[in-house]
Length: 193
Picture 1: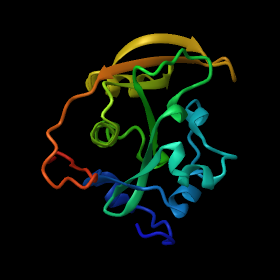
Picture 2 (picture 1 turned 30 degrees about the vertical axis):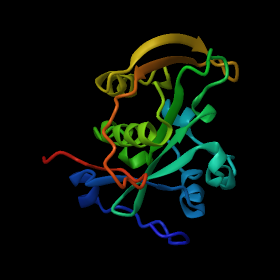
Picture 3 (picture 1 turned 120 degrees about the vertical axis):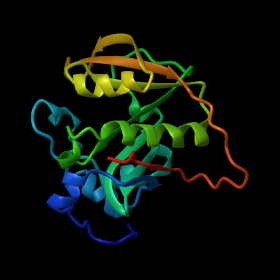
Picture 4 (picture 1 turned 60 degrees about the vertical axis):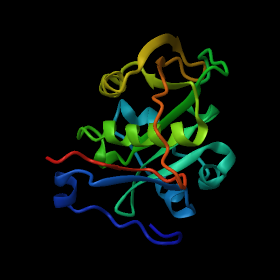
């Protein structure tokens, strides 16, 4: 999606077909303005970013990137301290990462591809020894996806902001062979259905 372009909603046919090619793109003002309008049904509403300023997401220092499918915003990934939840015990041994999918894309089995694309990008860009994610304890579907990607639970805690229970999961970084001339852009294609 080009900077300044409008959000084009996905059709029912596109939603039913699933994702094609998931790519990491720079977080644009248009993407950020769209993300702060996303609303999830309870209990997932704890992931709403209501009240956040879009400029926060476009500041490269905050670590946000867009997930796009054929140029359409489908989600985001974040790398760094904004992947942490107040109350957890964090250190410098791992790179924190998190993210979200557009609400109409959740629960459709697409999280694995979205997270894997982010991990590939994060491994190439930041080269961490370990990735760390923090997920709400009730979010069993996210935990299953993460476990399928090699993450293991390492800590449980209650957030100091609202008392919600969270689990921290970690996984060593898989070392990818970086081809000569790599420009920092990864593409992940979905398996044939």
